[in-house]
Structure formats: structure tokens, C-alpha cells
Image (cartoon, rainbow, N blue to C red; front, side, top):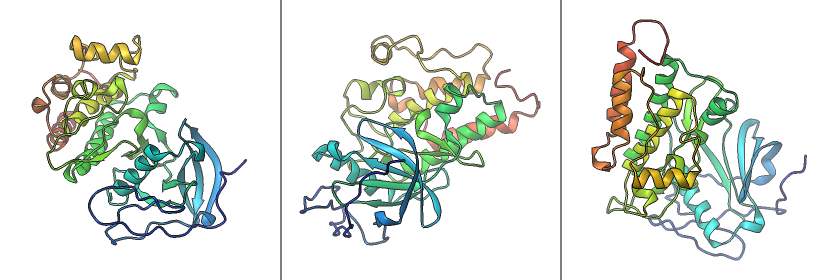
Length: 312
């Protein structure tokens, strides 16, 4: 297969000041803020590309190896690398290099020499939860559903404890490893929470998006809780949220009509209650992930019937 084109060499990026995430335009490379605690610049000559996993308008994702380790390599398309995309790239590296948790996809390094920008992470051989549910038509019995939901919640709780808001939490950004451990991925639109605690600007994907984000209102980490509720509903039903509506129709319904996915009648009462709490229009009424973890673990503890169903 054709490999992405790389420059003949990659010079290490100079270190930026600790603090704000900024883009500094040097002659041929990007500066990422760094506190000097780790070395993450990767020599592209050490990357071996095996196959393309996914393609997007702004970049492609490859499976490959780095120093004999299986990795995923996100390569930004050089013709699309303008100031905005450079800013997104810098933000993603700035966030990911600090993250260390068993339920968050592990950042390995990045190439920051323009125009060949790439991010290297651990390779997740199990694919995405979205593909499992909607392409492979897989289903989760209750014990597996709860385990997956706890994995997601623990990864997200870690991010929130570190003042990171994901903003695009959805099944496609939840990846499984060979042991079916689920990890939160894709920080392309993640942001470190501002000191004020609220953020603005629309992002994410409409079917999973909180109403306050759709409406361009200030929002905080509770926007991720709303999205988690939609993901939990997906795990429960195996269906695409608002499958008979366009994304825009779904967004209008969520904001103007209080539209939410329909909870099956035979859903466990505590699970149904959790979904409804996550979907509260008022973000302050939504639970935190630490509480969600407790609720899910309590449901798992009480599930002693052994019928492995998702409902009563």
C-alpha cells in the first residue's frame, strides 16, 4: 500500500511555555506546550505503515508498528493543514501526552514537523463499540453491558478529575482491546476546562450532543454526562439514537421538544432511572461519573439471577 509522504527528516520541536495551549509558527514545525516531564517526539522513519483503518476529510488512520509495538497512526492530510487544524492538532497532543489511565487510549508520541503531522497511540484490535453494535450487529448481555459502561465511566471520570472535557463522547470513540477492555479515544475536540469552569462553541456529533452544546450556550463537564447517557442507551438497545431522524432533526428535537431516546419498557428500573438522570435538560441535575460508577457497580452486584438479560 502507499505510505503517507514524510519529509526526509524530522527535527525535534522546540519547547513551548507551560500553560496556555498555543500555536507558534516556526519555519517548518509546530511547537506544542510542554512541561518537560516526558519526551514524545517520534522519528517518522521508525514508523511502519501496514494498513489504512479509516479515512476522513482531514486525516487518515493507519495500523502500523513503532519500535516493534503495534500502534495506530493518525496522519493529517497535508493539503488540509491550515491554522485551525494545526491548533486542533496541538491541542490533541497537549491533552493526550498527560493522560495515563487503563480506560483511556494510550498516547505514544507525535510527529510535529509540518506538513506531515501525526499522532501515534496504542492499537486497539477490538475496534469501536459503534462498529460492534451497528456493523457487526453485536449485543451486550447485562454483565458485559455493565462492565463496558463502568470502563467508559472510569475513563471519563479520570478525564474530568483532570479538568478535561471530551465533548465528543460517542460509541465510535470508544475502542476495545484484545481483552474487550473499553477505552475512551479521540481527543480531537477535547478541551482542558477553563478556569471559569464553562466552555462555549458547538462541537461533537448531534445525535449524542447535550442541548446546551447544541444551543451554543456555556457548558461544562456535565455535557459529557448527557452524551454518556445516549451511549448507555446504545449499549442497552443496540440501536442508533434517533435512527429515523437526520442528525439536525434530532438536535432540534432535543432542544425544542425535550426529545430523548425511547427507553424499552422492560429495562431494569435503576438503569432506566440512570438514563433519565443523565438526560436532564438542566446540567446541574445530571450525576457525576463517580456516582455513575457506584450506581452501575451496585446494579451489577444486585444482578444475581444469572439470566444475563438486559431487562427485568
